[in-house]
Length: 170
Image (cartoon, rainbow, N blue to C red; front, side, top):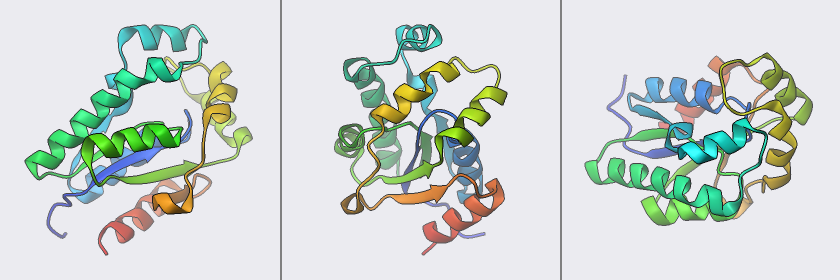
């Protein structure tokens, strides 16, 4: 195994795309900490989503700033970090970049039907399947100038993580 990766990664996509599973596996493979972005939501945001109410940009702003601060802390400490965060809009990604500097975004892209199937089989999460349409409506797919790594969520977890680790090591 090579030395610990010191880069900052945000695994992004709609709810149910696999951010936590892929992000935590990637972090283990890179020898860095994984942080669950959902843990940074204020309690009010969690209550809204659990009630089927989509978050607004204003609701998301403090959450994104908290994640940005955590990324910045890792950067300042000289440690790598993988964070799961929907980062649905370019403005959200730009806010994270402004907070932390160089951040590598990994976009988990999948068809609505596949994501809905995954959400239907998921339990114990506050985000209801009823909000999936609002997630896709808010999603602004990354543009080429953002340099985002795109992953097809139809691929297996081991294959996705292996491909990401290979890219990260070059």
